[in-house]
Image 1: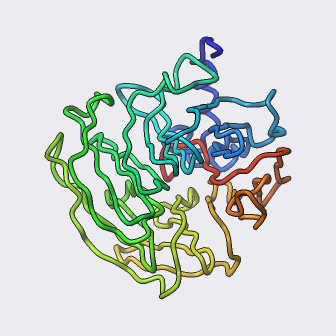
Image 2: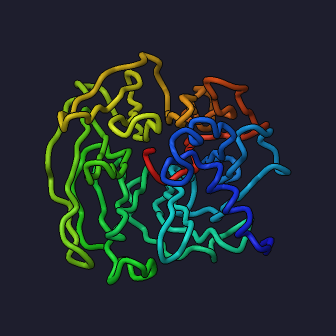
Amino acid sequence: MQRRTFLQGLAAAAVAAPAATLLGQQEAVAAANYYVATTEQTKNKVLVFPKNKAFTDANVHWSFSPGGGAWANLSDVKIRATEAQGWIALVAASGGKAGIVDIGSEKHTEGNDLKWSATPGGNPHAIERVPGNGSVIVASSDGKLTLYAPSSVGTLGSLKQVQTVSYAGAHGVLWDPTFELLWVVGKNRFSHYAVMGSGRNTRLKYAAHFSLGSGNLGHDLQPDYTNKHKMLMTATKGVYELLTDGGTFRSRKISSETKVKSYVKHSSGEVVSIRGDGTQPRDWANKTVRFSQSADRSRSGAQFYKARIWTTAFQ
């Protein structure tokens, strides 16, 4: 492991993260040189790069390498800011594990930098944390949501499993700070849940389901940082906007492109996406991360599955 004082780098990342809560809206739109967090499955690492630099080892801003076994095939990463711990990375792996990594004093982190981990099993595909509550939700594609709750909000290591909710094909989870709801996407539908209670009494309460149509497995759920009333879903049959303006929840198809595994929009309007290239051994991955307004970034031998923008709020 490489130890170093990382606070300066984190401050730079916070400035690069185009959230108006950090910069103000006008500056946020102009800040087009942001950081991209990826799950790369060949070497099984979370790799964070500056968007405007080549995706080489020399340009890695931060990484997490958990090893193999139940940590095989990293399937999700989300960078979040917390009051008690500062920057953390939420990670999930199809091999069965999920956890929270400390982003603080090291550039290249490993398994011993985990603040917390669990084994929800069932092919975990996504993970999210509820701000202000501290609970963590993992979506497993075999058909369940697993809720972990802390004894107190600021103590990551105290997270314990408190609830399991059946959800067919659960692939994506995302917290909506505007309506304070947890959104989930899976087989033929997307849904939202209220998060009730606190501490170990936290529970997910079903609110509503919405149809994606039969034979349409939802893959991923990410923000549209240009609009707090939009989220972005990928599914078998294309890419969709999830619209929440006026409190009327609905979806709209915006692309018929298939095999899109992740899709997120920066506050500048640039879309960052990954499409499965159909080649073995992981036909769901690709060596290239696509950018709609600038050059794509490829990495020789890489198999990227998810790409995220390093920021913490809708706008």
